[in-house]
Amino acid sequence: MTSPTHGSLLADLPAPGADEDFRPLFANGAVRIERIVSHHHASPPGFWYEQTDDEWVMLVSGAATLAFDDGRELPLAPGDWALLPAGCRHRVAQTAAATVWLAVHARHPDT
Amino acid sequence: MTSPTHGSLLADLPAPGADEDFRPLFANGAVRIERIVSHHHASPPGFWYEQTDDEWVMLVSGAATLAFDDGRELPLAPGDWALLPAGCRHRVAQTAAATVWLAVHARHPDT
Image (cartoon, rainbow over all chains, first blue to last red; front, side, top):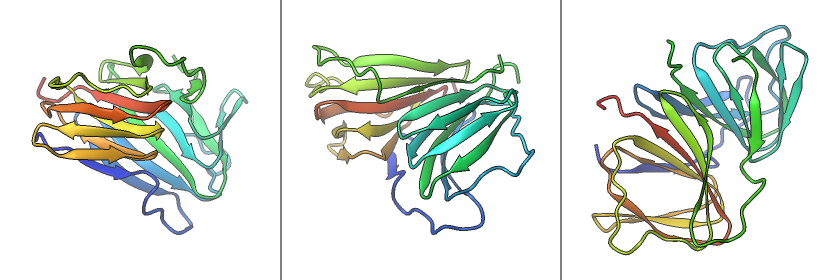
């Protein structure tokens, strides 16, 4: 495959719904890239993501706050990125309307 | 390593210079993520990138045009992304001032 494919992270935003919207953009054996659209979503209270892959996220539009199990909170504005290493317990504390994330899930070398 | 690291793609933009500015943001054995800042830069005439990794790029701010060796050109606005599969010959035809790219280099499964 040598042809480019392309698109826009800001096109075709879904209407607000009960769940966040996940759209795969690219995957090979090493990486999985997806767009996530949040509309005032948050992780359920007491729920923690704890993943075996390294995850690198960037806020493309909107606003959000990530929370970590040591009590820290990380507010994110457009252009802000965070690395969530494998095993880093985190949750989405809050998001604004029409919040667009880019998420890069990269296989952790030890898995 | 279980602590998050974070930053902003729009912070600490370098002054315009003779070369594009590459800043590594994250790497593990599977993926390498970097920020590229272009100021009216273009690839040299006749130069083609041809990589062994899959590269996924997104335009964060500014404007740019990618060109391919079959003559196609792909203009990019903020939020636009393109997949440049391993072996896809491409060059940067033009960029505006203060153009910020996100580039994800993902090891191709066959390499």
